[in-house]
Length: 407
Ligand code: MLT
Image (cartoon, rainbow, N blue to C red; front, top):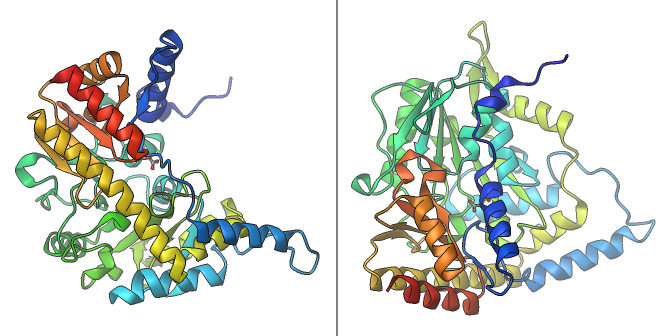
């Protein structure tokens, strides 16, 4: 009989958010009279910005006419979108990113998951703990780790992120080849300073490593002193790939559009020790395995950069940050220490008990869903993540229920 990829057997049975959804669905089915409020997975609730909706309609009309119909687009994305991204997200912030270094995709999750396949099977990994589980799980699937023990996989250099380092891990003494960083951080909401990122860039240069920088939540950074891109750090173009998304910026979780930046000068060695372009490899990978994002969706993403679109997406992020402020204040009233929520849509709460126990308690007593911190890594034990993505009404109701249940 054909064999499975046995690396999958090392994984916990299901993906964190699938596991939570299953538990919540079971609870909801068993208690139909107790409506659940979801502050677990970071899924947006507010409608698409009007500028994006107008662009979708316009593009749908174009697709309905022979003269303007489009079939396959460029796998890397249409030039009109790549040029806008380069101008607004990078040049305007003093970063040099060329349009042809941008690869438009259907999600930062897919990009973060897929990028590892252009690196060698024995690449040494450094991954923060806690962190978005996709980085670890996809490397387990690819066979870069041993089996799990005590909530960790052999073969990963874990970068502990705790209250004592402000949830921004310092560079380790040990070398690594691939370093995953995520700021604003999922799940802690912490944001690395420019100096902290500069230390990581210097580490990558010393170790000839590549940094995979996930900045899917950069639209939530409000402190002007904090970097929104790793390319704001001198020399980062030589060592870093960056991932961004329209999901949390413009409410595209269901619409699907994101991009990865792979600088053309970025290289890694082949078996003979010769430098090879990662841009060329990623391009080869995408052209082989991906047919691009649909034309109407790329038009909708481009509308984010219009005058109206920029105003609308700013208001959208401000709205969720308003929820985050309410959540932080409510946790403070309950005496629960928390981080995040100021430049990020996630609030990381120290609940002082096992995180799944707190998850069950909140679901049972308040019918509110959070995300157990331990699902993001061993350092997340004793914490939960509360997402600010919901309507104001639901957030207020959830906080009132939590106060009644725990107060
Ligand atoms: C999360 O809740 O961590 C995110 O929504 C997951 C994702 O973006 O894939």
